[in-house]
Length: 89
Length: 277
Image (tube, each protein chain N blue to C red):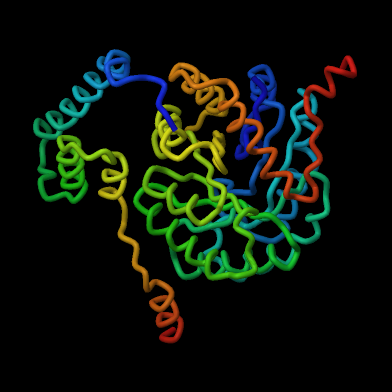
């Protein structure tokens, strides 16, 4: 389906919002650095860093990729796993 | 523009919300059974809840000329209690012939556990035996991708299920394609933080088209916005999309899907206008 807006129009409309959101992320990361205690080994921070790396890429499906960063993996054999658990119990 | 909110939990909202929604163009809504914020202790607790959904909420909605419909089930969060779930599933048929009952929902998974999958399967079995449509809840946040795939596995493995009679709700960018590719209806839920924004919902319309796509507020007792569908309508307009496309998603599509339920008896607002009411 065609998108009614062209690229320059999208940038004009959303530039300030994007800028504000980037500043919000930067401020959150700075706040964690200033606060006592470290979160360097927290898996959630690693997820955030992987998501930020995706933002810097040029793929057309950045949202979907970032969603998957924050998702548990799908295991295709889940039914067999549940059936095995049932047998054990 | 008239619209239909296909997923909203009005038992958690005040009467003023019905009035506000009516003023914003809402002429119909469907309310799936869900978690009350605490686990109910007995099948009679559910029986009372189903009476509220089928008796009082349609009446409260009608005060503002909003047509209220509902779906019945025990939700995934309470499905860990398999014995209670079985009692509730056995009781649901008492209500299936009541006016406005559209089917079984919102069933699904929450933490993607074995017990949840057992209760989900038994709900599917009930729906098939009673020829009901199905409305499905997919999990939140990090559990959504895995849970949605598991739900699709179970649906696609059951040859009795007509995919065109199933609505899979709360889709996002990483789950919408699989749902639509399998021929199911897909619902986008507009939640402030945990699900989808109006702007991202418009993106998904642009990427996948309007066929079998719905948008809802899922307004409930938590942080949520019952007027999220009008937010989506505005976002579509600001993006430059025609009124006909917007109407298709917020009005025509819900009516098309719900028309598959035998208890769906909808009076279009134009009928009231023509009658001078």
